Image (cartoon, rainbow over all chains, first blue to last red; front, side):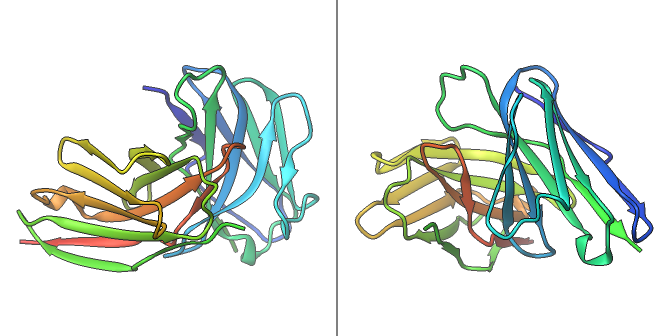
Length: 118
Length: 110
């Protein structure tokens, strides 16, 4: 089946630094990837929709200058948390939809990246 | 807007059936899903149902959809310890965005 991989799976950084998280579709091409944030014991909150070759679409309340998203190729989207602060600590999960996928609506999820900001 | 609600916890004895319930408010959804999340991991798609279907069965999993009441349920037959996890229901629309419930933590006891 389709595989989505995130890297790093765990990152600890100092307050004020920037952290980049990668989301790769390993065996398929993805025109659209989604970035979610999950707080402990809570649901996933959609942050933004990443489209290959164009600007990301951010959900209401998500700071686009804080969470930079780049979808430079059909297999890679990156999320950069700029000037991270402890409140940015969270579990970030990406999902990807395969180009031309006949099954409407199936998304494949990465294993998640846990960010801890000290 | 989208609003998906689930009960937060379910405890079930090994070998019994588990039923996880979900309600949603937006009737324009195209697909409804059940995902499983194990500790520290991403989401695994368990099953899905198209919004014009009433039921779908897939091995130990049975999904029931009551579109009139906007109620979705997942039944797991012969629940095993490996079924302990958080289960999320979700709905999607034509733009493929998913709206998730808060998740139901299922604990299987021996």
